[in-house]
Image 1 (cartoon, helix red, strand yellow):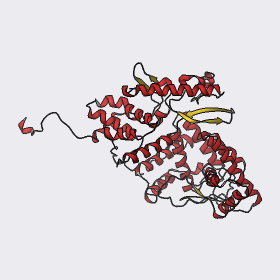
Image 2 (cartoon, helix red, strand yellow):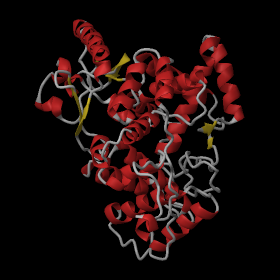
Image 3 (cartoon, one colour):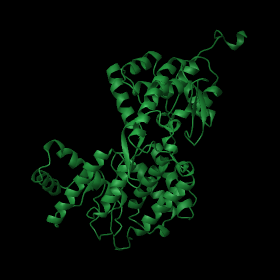
Image 4 (spheres, helix red, strand yellow):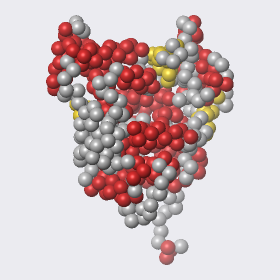
Length: 459
């Protein structure tokens, strides 16, 4: 997150008071301003141009912010531009935590600073209007690189998380090479960058390998250039991580401290071994209550699978479906456009978002405005809400373990293994491509044998 310059921050606070903005929302307005400047910092938009606000509002829509939040954000940023017009010489050069300040308009020479301990903040890169200077290029050529990166990832149907991860590492690589012309990049730049991450930034092995894979994709698929022989480039080896597993009593304790509908979310995570995003993307047609089967569509790696539904929660599932059905009917009566539908299904099947079977099993509490359509639609429950509810429940249960939503999936697999289920069966229920991934759960239970331990000499 960027740091607002003191002069800018003070001037903005005074403006809020002059405009009679309620004191209770001052912090919200300052938060939206910081988010906006951070957005301009990360996505190469001019932080002193009104045009950037349009792109920011599109981003808020993509993040499924409520209409009220979008309106508040627009008001906060509009006041910021009103302040700039009144004081054109006010410093508006925010700096990111652990990164170099954003370049001044018209300046193209960006020097990367040493990485911070946490590389969550994207590295700085040139603004779109940066001019060529001292061998560095304007951001226009790099903007094309990011556009091509987006296209290549979309063509391969990689997940949005892959796109976000790869683009972040490419931005850091651009900053490290001082925005070197993309056509002049060579394999030695990759070696230097990976060494820089390992030695100076001291990143983890997984982050180092992720950066390497991102640059491999950049060179081969986007730049269409030789990646070179990287055999002498040392690849960090990940250490084996033993998953955190809860006992059945601990699982019940967490569920007991959760309110509806989060208790049902965790029951499905644990009872069916789901990933959190798989659970959030469930729709009503995924449930076959007569057969007691749950079908998971587009799981990790775009794979489908079926898992048995816990019989003990089928009555709660039926009650929840009744709630979703009533909520959907209220949306239709109010003239809303239904649920968001993935891909181009809605172009093929008109009004598919209004069909009951396509409604989210865990619908969001608020509606989302689609600017292009001018309609309100309902998205699914956000993952962050579930994670916060789980953390609160774990604290109340006083469990001294590192518990996340994924811990219930680990517990699902481990408890099946303790019940002497075949490892191949567990692999299929988890949706693992390789049984070696499932084998990690053999380290979470005690070694057991039916026979008494004897020396081979006594056989």
